[in-house]
Image (cartoon, rainbow, N blue to C red):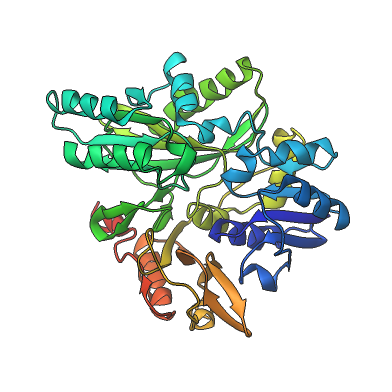
Length: 427
């Protein structure tokens, strides 16, 4: 079949890499893709992923038979709904279902009304009232304060603040200074959840679901979890701290009731459900839901997937998840993000990248994110530039090998964390 993947990040290159291994594939297209996608797909560069009509036109012109939507923004914008209207199956949830990520308030209300474990919170639309609330709660507790923009913010709309001054600054930046635009018209201030954060991704076909191995993302820009939140600076899977007991609890007390609550609202969820958890002293609690594969979680999960990724996506789209056998290798995976210096704030583009092939020659996977081709050279074009991924039997070897790969790649102002997975060596 002719397959189209929507998106341009490391997640989408990893998806393209996985789809290319499927015997179901005839030809792969990526829109817009990146320099890594260029060698394994036909790229469509002159169409915005947010222009539903233009995407539909491409689907018809290229005789696309199946679509995989990578990022959240097109889903929130109703792209999957428009694709289904023309009779083309799509892996990606509806706009109504995408409210789970498009509005943190919607997701919080669903959780609190259905007894799904999560942090207690308050919602504000005015910075003055929010700041007064911060003064109130900081007088009662010394725990960090979490401030979240209501809408989508590319993984950067959450602030964990250690003091009231930083929390108030976050409130003013989101509500008054509109650093996330309309996504910050409303904010949530919630209690801090202690414990390691873990991501659980599930294939969901509207009725049935399959839970993939847990992964752990590193959100902060710098070593030791310092600096601003980013889209993610590295990841590993599986997560030793996510025990079988936690897994069972997450399935029974979080995933099942969440999907039932959506169904009770008349929302059929089809696609992937991202459940972000905090493994607190009182058990797993939901930090957030997303409606797409995580990035960089995808870059460790798909290399661990033993079965056919495209077949699983098609089964989800047709509501036949039970009819496919989904398996994962009993191995470890570690991925390190190489970013442009200054990310997630201001950074420069257009620097030539060298050494990718040297890293790949050792069996290391290199997934492109913010890259482009310029005069036959691969250059930087985004904040997160590359994802270097290694799979193996033990974390010690994976971590050593992944950083060996990272050190073989070079571009001006490159930045990466040096502590991805290091906590595993200390447990």
